[in-house]
Length: 132
Image (tube, rainbow, N blue to C red; front, side, top):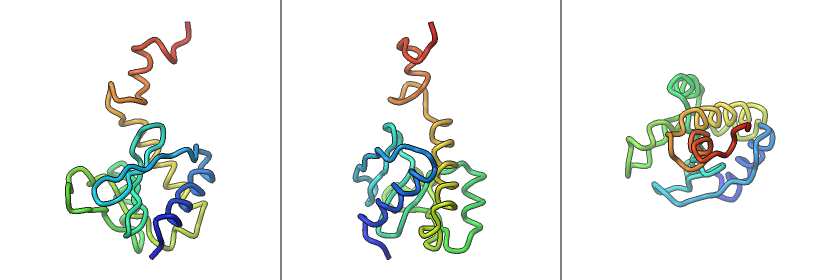
């Protein structure tokens, strides 16, 4: 069992290895810390480990690995049904963890609801992000 500080560092190392920003923010939610990148929730850090938000197909693939489990904080299981705990053994393997973090981030970016902060659709409607 790792402390929050160690899990936070492991997640940041995985982000760096994945070629993503390590400028993440943590917000207490559902009995854990929701980890946000560019304002979008992509992971939870809890006493039980790191859980990543994944597409349905990637959830099945990760859950097939020994030690992976569905993240269920109890407070709102429907809200967390897209999150899967990374197996403990993977926390020491930066390359494998980075691959799953990339999958998580790709899913989060692709499924950001229109109008949410950080959404490309919001930026284009406001005249930002378009070539003129």
